[in-house]
Length: 151
Image (tube, rainbow, N blue to C red; front, side, top):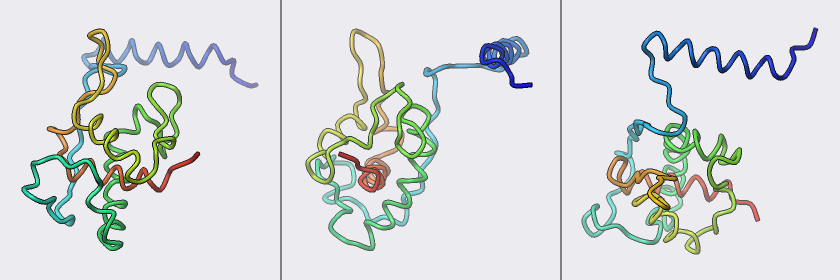
């Protein structure tokens, strides 16, 4: 017998209620703890690694860019996928990042949003990730997103 669609929703709701009643915190989009990103294999960003740049510094060297994409894929999975979707395919909660402008055309917008987040009318739509993850992780994520670009 096929389960009824409504019963799945009831099951999920029941599980969330049960989890919250035994002491587990359940948050929809709110309190998220950024997952650490190991960027030690990536070169520092000139001039001082803390001055935010508006162009992906890893794109110029093919070997570094390949490493940045690999690190970025993991960083995206741990920090971005819960809202922007697995493999950068959004389910509607947040923008679908496959449609960011590719290359330098989208770099400045991406890093500003990554660094400062997004809010409107006092509501946080995306938390600022810059201080939590750092610029190297941001550019690694951007490098990986370039591989997912669609028109």
